[in-house]
Length: 430
Image (cartoon, rainbow, N blue to C red; front, side, top):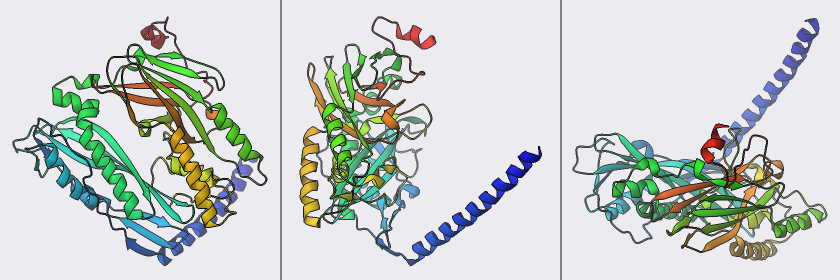
């Protein structure tokens, strides 16, 4: 008991010193913020896609919280805080877009409405991510994710779905506008592509929007050997962790003198259409997950990967702000900046072009065909052990989503694969 009490006193001393250190850090951060200049980022996104009207009348509700949503980004290397009027720009765009989607569209004051509409739709800003890449000068990347809630006129929530978009460029406003515009285009297409929206339009059961996970059959593998997930008669996905070409590149970079670790990993995917319907593959929907409750990892844009892989020339800045899923330790793995800006840009552009040719693209896979390519993730966990990769694939004609889930690395003891000869329902109860 005495020894325990003595240890607590020593621990208490350490906590006190840590508390003082934390206070000093907080004061320094506060002083830095006070010294920063603040500026508004000009945003003016526009509707850039053709729209096909839906055969339902829509009310749309833009809440005060939505319209006044401002995202601040602290550019620590420049002593500047950028303010993105994301809500104001989004509200202006959706006021223009939604009436094009529904001839009877009308803006309403709440999710419950007495207006003569079939449903009320409410956009919500779900995520905002901002990156700065310094390759031959400033280069910005932005991601915006919206959630769309669909309500019955009496106010009951019917269903909801998410869409996201990204943009990049030499200007912050340019990148943000591109992200909002791509999100808006995907929202307009969602009434034809998202199972929840399609089923509402067609009067189909919403509960069947996503196929039961128990229907998937998994062909496991050990180590870095390929593994496969299958929904019979629908889709087969083959996953190869860290394919040979990628491993060779990582080893070559690691062998360079004074090179820092490149904390990236790649997975090669092959998605095969086994059915009679068209399948939508959208790489931005893919995620790495685990059972420990950690936030999922999302694929990295090829431009960010190209920046990290710019051999001994490029560097990518730490995330300036945003609580999004992409603000991860990847960004501290940038290589040292040893060349001129022009050399950086040349190397970056070459690598970016190579990655564009290799990465998995958003596409529609017709029956009997397949698509393949690479997706890139921050290597936040050694050898991806215990992580699962989730690949959502949408049956556009059947309004059904198949989420193929297979190990991204070596299986853990908690993972219980089953084969085509086993009954998935029986396996689940074991």
